[in-house]
Image (cartoon, rainbow, N blue to C red; front, side, top):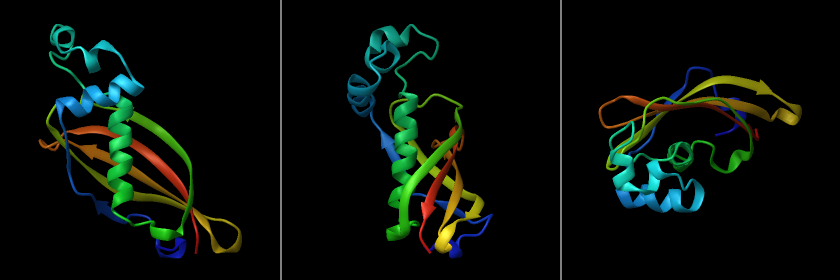
Length: 141
């Protein structure tokens, strides 16, 4: 979409993705090798009683789901920021995630381009919110 086509209040819902135990371990071994993400036995004794996905994996998965919707299309120039990042609830093996994206701000820039900010809210299969963040991107007109 072109910058001029975005309006505050527009909402989009993504498809879902399921994170397996192996997905969680594989991601964490590379990017966040803490026990609660990679050591099943130790994680079972911890606060959450099971392995949990890294917050970075939840954020990356949320971003992937949003981008794959193709709303920005070829008009996106670059991401410009992420604010108010909140890891609300843990994501467990076999949780199925989906994202609701709502346009919360549009700021015109030179030559008709502008910054579009969406609030990404990620939910699990029980409709519990697990993640939220504001994502801004420069979009061509």
